Image 1 (tube, rainbow, N blue to C red):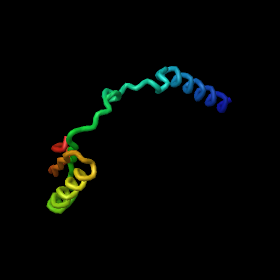
Image 2: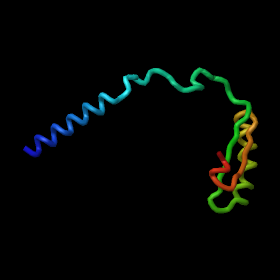
Image 3: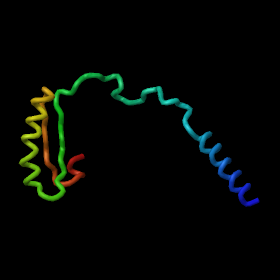
Image 4: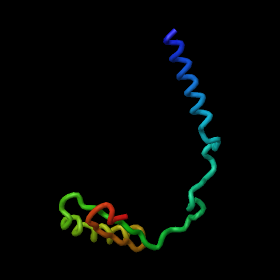
Length: 87
């Protein structure tokens, strides 16, 4: 009896959760930039150092230059003091 009750409870919960779901099949694109296929003029990269900020700051400039050469666009790189400053 206990197993039957547990099974009915799980089955009921499955139907309730399925009924609360969205009827969208996922084919509709709701992204704001979905139709925008333009390439950016500038790529901005931010880094948050975990330990040695001086070492990271020295490595960021060559990385940005290399990315700029390969991508053919301007790349700006910054090293911040914490994650909140990055946002």
